[in-house]
Length: 90
Image (cartoon, rainbow, N blue to C red; front, side, top):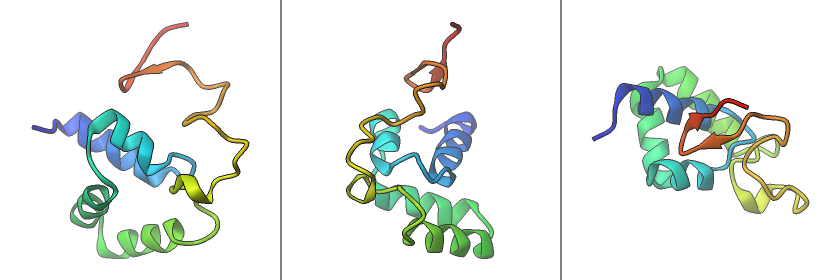
């Protein structure tokens, strides 16, 4: 069962261009297709359409295959440590 907090975090991660679907799958065990369905359900139609257009464009790096091969992490190296979706203190 997904909590409201989990749902908000998945939407946030999906909206972020640099967070690949694989990172969402790693943390929440849901596929790209499930993320798309969730976004379709939770966003306004116009917001969903903008998001899909961006994800499928060259701007987004939602798919690991489209990313620069030198990027081998899910997050910025300056970002706080994230452990199973919980931000830990430094």
